[in-house]
Length: 267
Image (cartoon, rainbow, N blue to C red):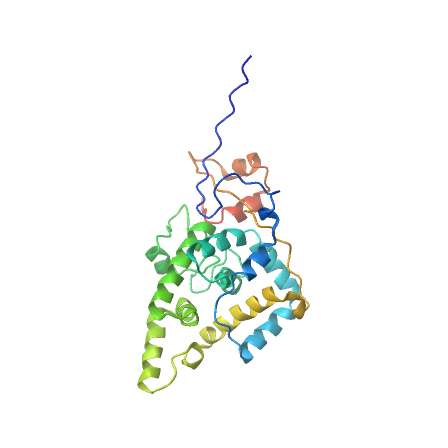
């Protein structure tokens, strides 16, 4: 008798994954994802007292760094894939460590949401849906696409990654005005020379500190969790509504893990 026809495989619509069949046992997939990231570091190095301060802050909190990097391990492959596809510095994949400690459910007092911390208006500007059913600011893939679109636009405007990051945190209008003020006064127009709020003043040094820790964890007596070079998850389209508890059970996942992989869903 002819063998029974197998069910069609679900269509994968995750633009961030490598094309073709996923084989976690091939040589490329078994590479160290941290090493892959280190190979893409390309941002100008910031070296000042604030960087030292934040290196020390993280180094004295190994449990926090462990939780943060383990949580980020779910999502880093997807972010690095998209950063590399765009030819951007791989340090940008570390920005959610600074923004939200890689928590896609993070919500600030100012109503910024998700691991990239999009404000409601900015999220809508970058086509992140927000309604009673979903908030795509919390969607790992959609918010990553939007954040990198935004960062690329800011870099195109300022032609400087440190200024682009300051604008991501403080707003491009504020950075533009700070630059104009310095030009009027005959002052430097570098990130470190601008007058800015303390949060923005510390923003790039925090990212530089995380980058230095990823580059040389042993120098800070820290250990990073092992991450291999393949996706933690794949995306499949939803053909019709299904109860979340049932979907999680059929996927063989604990409910909290299902929510961690689908953090954008409200209902």
